[in-house]
Length: 176
Image (cartoon, rainbow, N blue to C red; front, side):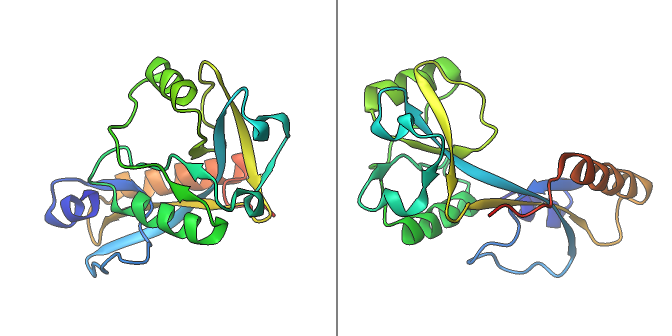
């Protein structure tokens, strides 16, 4: 939805997962990769996987994981979840309303008792622990996209800031 709004001129720039399997190319959009964001599992503190420092993707076969998109207009997340479940052999919880806010997310995590797919730098959630996924480390790829020929100095400044952060924070370094 954000890319469509970008193409129509409703937005000037977007950050997100631009290249996903079912994304239709938009020839009027330029983009640059700005970050590889490792994924992790947010686990109830009492979950058996919470006792490990990391969680191997291979250990998830048959496990139920909450990967419900934050809202219905997130096809890029739905695509990522579909690929993640195919890789890991895990399966999704039934569709449900997403938990909003940290307290609700903590309550949902503990009440539901199943892991939630999250980014590796997710903030602490009451009753939960975050464990990086490894072997392999799944990545969410963030890109910056803008309408070709628009933005001028503003787009140049945003690209420079993203590149600087990418360098200082190691955003484009691939993890194993």
